[in-house]
Image (cartoon, rainbow over all chains, first blue to last red; front, side, top):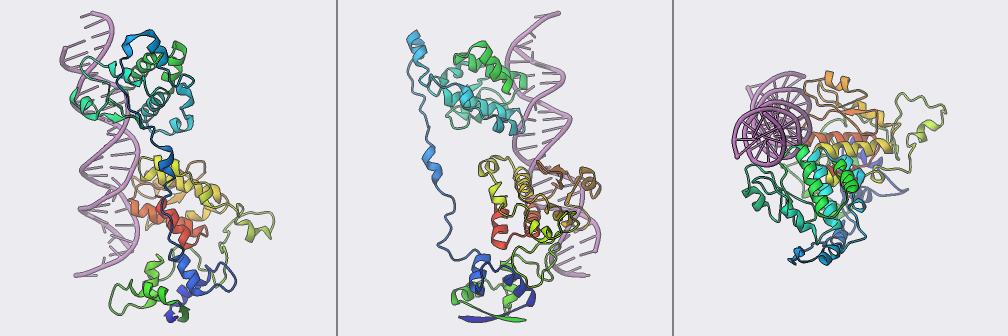
Length: 188
Length: 188
DNA sequence: GATTCGATCGGAGGGATAGTTA
DNA sequence: TCTAACTATCCCTCCGATCGAA
């Protein structure tokens, strides 16, 4: 135990933070200074549990058969709409944020067949690819962005009209019918 | 001047934070507790030695007189922490987004006393107000933004340090103790 | 010509820091 | 004069419409 001398205002400040009858100065100070306890568990690593959808595109040949096309829907019961969070969408600052969110949903719903989007491209720019470099190399200022939680990248330097077109093509490639495609493009 | 008795480990902690030869305990403690060097925070009307939530009403037309003291904490069981969504926070692009989200949480937890933040201000700019115009008029390029889901506006044209300061002052005005204030400012 | 595509460039937002004031 | 506090300019990044190119 030690005695220290402090100014009145400090003293009052400490007293005013008493949280239990008879609490002593040390206890109050520890709380105010964030000391004591058995440390604080900074960030719970609860994160690591859910992650790891990772997904490896796998290079099976899709073109081979119709059967394949069906089987593609490994998540057959899943549709993008199960992965769209309207709140989150609404919160985005601009079209790019929404664009990425929608694509991320498409990827989550169809991780294995997603690679077909890779075929969607412009006159000379690639629109989708597995790496930033590929997109960057296909044009100037393409502004590649990674589709969240996926191994794919998209070109981002385009007007909104074109972004909608990309969504339309992507959804169509993944087997959505016209009315669903329409709903998807309207999300942007 | 007052004398207080503290544990050895606390004593050492304080001593080890000495920053100049001959610095006294009060000075060190003020620094550690983020208290202003002299006088107290601008806004907090220094209480006497009373404990507990302190806080004072300002012009409130509460119908029941007794309610006044207690009623401050209309959402007494509510703390900002119940209104903070870490996910949402993490998603923000920059400090401004987080800043607004944290303030919105503070407002939701304390809608009736929130008006005290209105007293927080700089040399000539207002930091909080009930209208965009007020803030805009108090300086140039103040970039006022409305605190989501609230009738209040904040100035936004400041560096991150100052935004943290604003949060600190706001939380303090609303009766949070230092350790909570610290947690809040760390959210930014 | 008509149409599709590319990427430049103006605009908005954010916030560090230079500059100002008390 | 010197310093601490505060302001708001200004640079940077992100967006995406627009207009030139194919």
